Image 1 (spheres, rainbow, N blue to C red):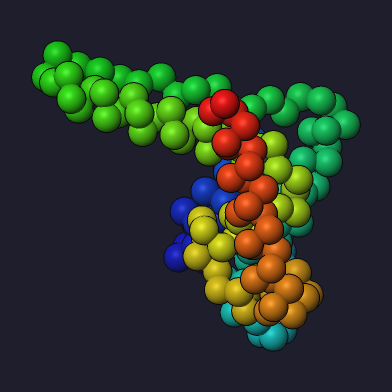
Image 2: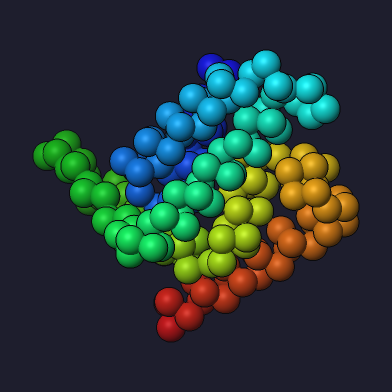
Length: 162
């Protein structure tokens, strides 16, 4: 399970849009996996099984946060600069940070289901077959959901730049 630690933490942080909350949920994922280890049947890979747990834990956390209305979009990351940064490097860093902020805000505006498939495909690098296994759908349906979510994210990000 250590092999997937960074991926699971990153998945949770990105799904929830908050580092602290994502770290807490990731800990719950590994606790739940450890507790359920004896019930792991091996029908899927350990990675797929672990991300199924992560997905459920994230959805549970989002549902609780929605009830409490305490989950806010992530605050922009403060950029640390130093005198040795030349103007070009600083400009590139600012542009990169703006793109990251737009992407984060765009992801948070997606429906849970849309954000979930994009995170599985792009962040955790799951194949369409693995996503299909996670969602109990056909591979074609998984592919279609990823494509639809990508189009919706592009629309959201385009609206934000207009």
